[in-house]
Image 1 (cartoon, rainbow, N blue to C red):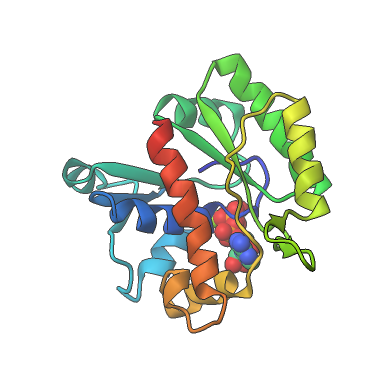
Image 2 (cartoon, rainbow, N blue to C red):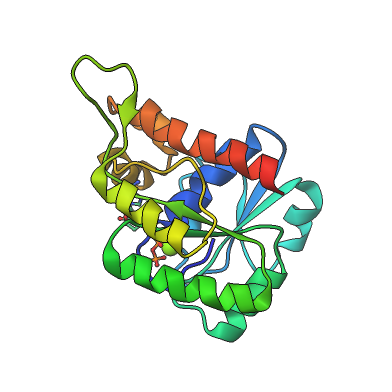
Length: 204
Ligand SMILES: Nc1ncnc2c1ncn2[C@@H]1O[C@H](COP(=O)(O)OP(=O)(O)OP(=O)(O)O)[C@@H](O)[C@H]1O
Ligand SMILES: [Mg+2]
């Protein structure tokens, strides 16, 4: 997980993607962010997979099939290059906000130069709505516009996106993943990351 912009959902995505991938095979999450947000989330020992700092990650990596790495915001171009070269798929979370998309497009330009394999994950998007009398749900205008912009820029995007749910903000306080947070949308929130993890497994 990487992004030039802070607060776009890297840690939330790293935790939940690791949890979903762990259902497929043993997974470890490496927290390489100095803020230790993922390590703090894991401190209550409620997560089903190990979270470890970069130092000393080797023994966990040896036992894992999937390795998810959470990184700090605003990496230098040099750091971004190291991150990109060290992974099978670089996931770039972004919200559909104009400023976040702008930073994202700059990141994608850097990655194109490095010929890195990356994919954008839209996070905190407004929920899809069902129009009266219709069966299918419709994505919000905000998400549609973001997708159009990314398509125009020829930037690869996950088909699944992550909806804005309060449960995502609250789950870390209990040290759990969102599906264990007592909230009526907890399952829907969890399903977002399950869908992304399926796409990841088909991508790497
Ligand atoms: N889908 C979501 N719905 C609602 N809130 C969310 C969602 N995803 C993340 N958040 C909230 O947005 C804030 C930023 O998320 P997060 O910490 O995952 O981002 P980050 O990119 O890791 O930030 P940083 O750059 O500080 O490391 C947090 O308060 C988090 O709870
Ligand atoms: Mg973070």
